[in-house]
Amino acid sequence: MIPVEIYTTVYYTALSIIILLGIFPLFFKPNLESFPTINLTVTNLLLLTVTILFIGLRDPFGNWRYLGDTSHYTDIFFNYMDDPVYGIKSDYGFYLLMLFSKEYLNIYIFYILCSVLYVGPIYLLCKKYFKEYALFAFILFVSSMSFWSFGINGVRNGLATSVFLLGIYFYEKKWLMYVLILISLSFHKSLVLSIIAFLLAMKFTNTLILIRIWLALVFISYAFGSQVETLVSNLLLNSGIIEDKRVDTYFSDEIDGAFMERSYRLDFIIYSGIAILLAYYYKYKKGFQDIFYDRIVNTYIIANTIWVFLIYAAYTNRIAYLSWFIMPFVLVYPLLKQKKLVRNQSLFLALLILGSLTFTLLIYFKS
Image (cartoon, rainbow, N blue to C red; front, side):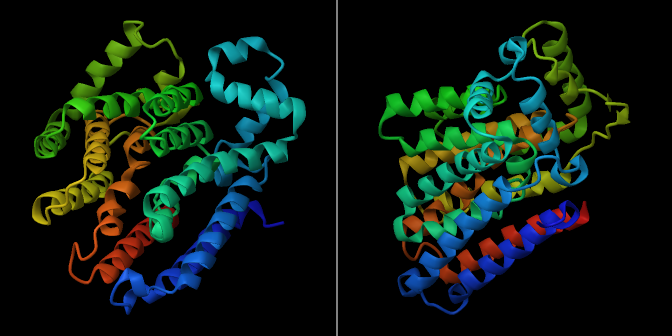
């Protein structure tokens, strides 16, 4: 068994090797049609296997310094499932999943099940929309900065976003899509932000105006963000609009006795802005037109704009993730849907993947 102290490092090492070997032909192949089929097949299989097994087979009792809230979920599994009050107050979709698992499975199978439910919808979504080139979209998902963290730490958030993506998988069957999106809310209430953004994207269809609003909020948040955060926190915590003690942690200066430094995250702004910049480039410079893509892009921008508004919150990355989880789709969809959209498209895609992986590794080894 891999020691918990190096578990994440081993995971990222394996992930990096598979990705780099898998995409290597992109650097010298003239187009995607000439990309070796064996690379597509084998790399897909390896990535699917490695991500599911590493996330699912982590030590259920591992120290929080290395595996985040995993041990906390394990504690809930063993000590709180028999308390009906917990189920009432918690996210009932996740609660029912855990209740079923405790009744019929064990803690190890429970985490494997969570891993399959987390990774599976992402893979299915990529296969549906990109067919034989699903690998490149899937790589961008699993190499994204927050993928690992929300698989082992923010488990409820991660599962909720995957159920949301499963809803997008059934985009043509609107009734089923909305049912699944509502179910995603039952896994974590924070998905209300993503759902609101998705619904608003039906009405606010002008991407250029949304980009301008995002840019304006970036500067406003920098200048007045702390005051805005105080106003919002007072509204949510004192008005009774949201009766959930977990909301307190997003606006607290001290959590579990530890001081929370809340600051303007320029690195996260740049990270978020790359997807918006590329969406602008695809749509307005290269003329890419696709109604489905427009809605996904607009959902991303709206959700990310709300995060920019709340950038001084304690767990700002958790709010940002409510837009970041669809970022890979924003980055890669036009490249895999339209041939010769950009010059040296294969190389462009390779550099995009390499950039995503490099940024993720820098964030991990920096922390």
